[in-house]
Image (cartoon, rainbow, N blue to C red; front, side, top):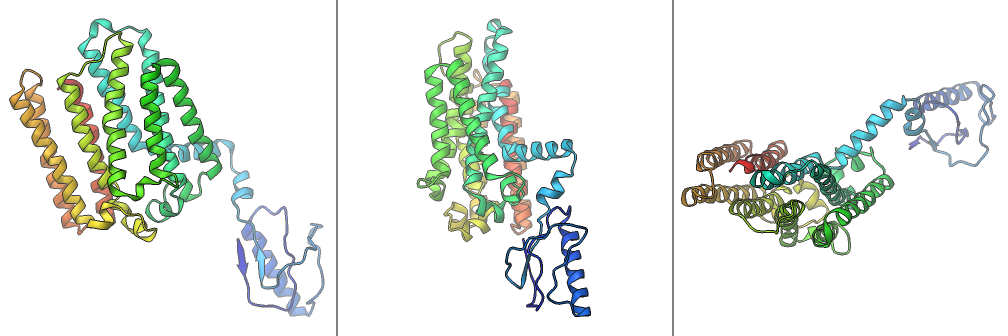
Length: 382
């Protein structure tokens, strides 16, 4: 950090090492400079407390001050620094996406497969299930992490709370994490789930890479961006997890009505997430010329479009329960989706009344994710 001063006839030492605080360093220098000027000692060199002074030439008009990051941070207790690192890594993982992945894989699809075949459940499958969940979290961490690395400038405008944009996590540490996530995920899947699931997992990582990384950076193109998100979070996650679970139980893969339902439902839901995720980011996307549906069509239109697609999803769900009572529990599916639909209409009205402020848009987007979690929460029982 440089502190620019007005031109002055006296020469200020370029650096004063070993002081604990930037504030103390700057105050002391300015006070001594003022004192020397008042008594006419304008060109003398001084020693203070026997601290060595650098004789390197320095531009007049500027002093380099300590930032406080290293010196002040080193005085903090180790436990506090470790807690800060843990917090930064957790924010780096984007917790709301992890909740969606965990609910979608472990709590919903795995639970569904086990409920259908309770006689095949063995304790030996527990380790495999948790290793699969960890691999999915690694894949999720890689995709959201690589996006943050290449979106630092945009995130400083749209999401300044993210750890790289906020300066809480270095780019080097972020690269270490995403490389670890990719390697760990591939190794776990390769050793535990066979070549077919490994190929699906690799395809998911590839799509997540071209979404964010130049020269592809498919997020610049609205249609390509929402197709990638819908494919990864919709089809690949649901089909892949259910296939792997049945394979672990020693069963051949076959579609069932509930699995077809959730895969189709979540693919359309992921499309809604893909187009509404940019609603809070319009300011930064316009500044850095990122073309999204929100920047092209406007926040209000996209909010209505996303709400309309979700309402269609809920209507089809109710109709499926009505016309296929042998495949679904109508007493759960119908009231649950009617409740979700009514709450969605209410939240869309709240957003309209708030005149689409940034806080209201962020709240609406969080509500969309809550509906996503709710769908997976009821899935094992439908």
